[in-house]
Length: 112
Image (tube, rainbow, N blue to C red):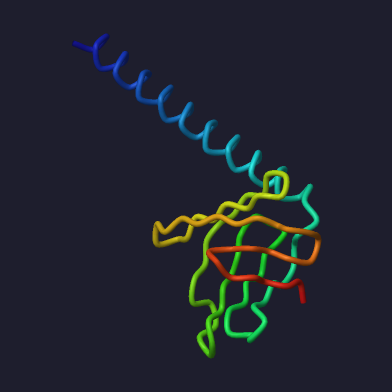
């Protein structure tokens, strides 16, 4: 019985450690990927209604109209593709057409 408890405790610690290591590696990969792209900064639709701020730490903050921080989450850039994961679970993507133009969800954003 004591051996079984020790084994179960050890197994639980190994699993927790593996999960923690995976989460840390994934976060480091995301941060490394984002640190290497040239798109950090503010991106705005032509009417100024929607504003995406891409932060260097792999997070974004989206404002809509007068509503600041309407949506927040993380993002990854791979080549000229951007992938968003909103904190509420919503996902989206986009394409950097050039260094100053982002095509996202049928909207065109320009670097500000």
